[in-house]
Image (cartoon, rainbow, N blue to C red):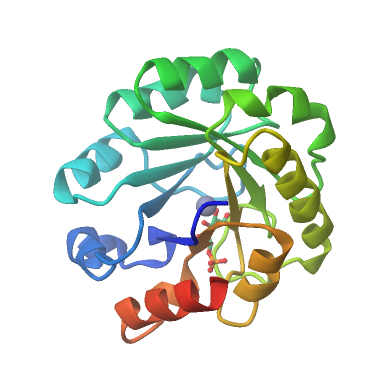
Length: 217
Ligand code: DX5
Ligand code: ZN
């Protein structure tokens, strides 16, 4: 199993000062960027031009979470920008296997996300096409929601499936991760943790990252 990784989400950052908000999280393992289109989720954030500028503004690996329709068209464009990891939603992809292969062919890590009510079972046979599986622990769309404990059994089943394949696929959770919840998610088998408000609402983001990492270990 991979040692715990903390990916702060800039959804909860000050969007008028994104470059300086990135410097607050320089001790993180990657920056998590939530791309929303107001169709797949009822919220709108940023797209390719802003991600391109962010890519040039930081050395941190970029973990792009696409909450958009038609990821088959758009996800490869984020890989082309040099984003290290691109996550599409299983519920939105027309051809998830083809898309995962395309992302890898462009040099990005391929990742797929599941909303809370989407089961992992239909996707077990394609896990080997992925570098990361993201299990949403809130309904996607907004920061600051409460962690859904009912996802813990799904995290455990996913951990078993990932281990059966040799354990090199990262298992990410996103939504409501805080000092209160990260241990439960880690015990269930998650190794990569998105934290938005828990990091960006803290006075000292570096300490918040260190504390989350310690609790997950
Ligand atoms: C929600 C986003 C999350 C969000 C997490 O749809 O995918 O990445 O920013 O925010 P918190 O950690 O506050 O739940
Ligand atoms: Zn996210």
